[in-house]
Image (cartoon, rainbow, N blue to C red; front, side, top):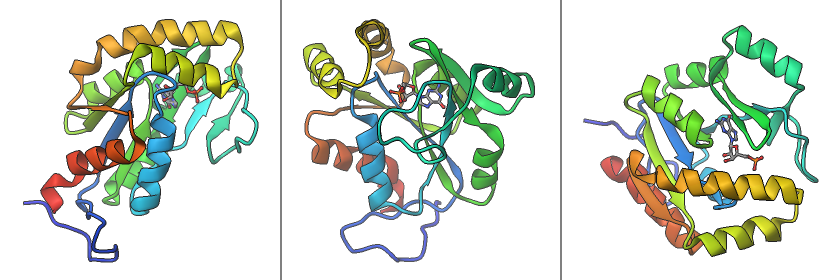
Amino acid sequence: MMQVLPIQASATTKQCPSTGGLIILTGPSGVGKGTLMRSLLQRHPELYYSVSATTRSPRPGEIDGKNYYFISRSQFEKLIAEGEFLEWAEFAGNYYGTLREAVLKQIHSGKLVMLEIELEGARQIRASFANAKSIFILPPSFKELEKRIRDRAQDSEEAIVRRLRRAQEEIQAADEFNIQIVNDDLETALNDIEAALFAQAS
Ligand code: 5GP
């Protein structure tokens, strides 16, 4: 039986199991994983968000240490060699990775850790953490996904094309994950994620 945390949340907020573990949120670039994750963390401040390292340049408004740890390729490769990543992958020309120590420390202290990562990294985590709960976020349609990526207007045309090509491959892998949720309406998708994650605790 799973235990629940002491009640601190409002009556409408579901409680999280207190046993530490990993939750993977994956899905193609532009599908809205970041927005869903931020909203989920607002509703569940007891969840721990793992800040990834990346070699991508910061976008306007992104803060080092909050959105990502922005590091150079040589720094990233040194961390790979030292075994500092729980998983890492190359995505659209840049490295992205989850830092091992911070995540394991949180899991061991009983926290639920959220990873917002792409397909290859999600596969690596699933291979090493059989109990990780994995959620794949799908767009309502590929056309809508392309629109979202283009409307974001933060990437070059070359990067957009790479992300779209990769998105097609990622969507085909949706069935590998425990739960698939379509992000058409944000509130509905959030409720679906909560229901999937916290069903045992309510
Ligand atoms: P973006 O450049 O749009 O912030 O992220 C590109 C992709 O990399 C997204 O699908 C995002 O979820 C993924 N990503 C972010 N952090 C990590 C990470 O630590 N590991 C892996 N494998 N993917 C990540």
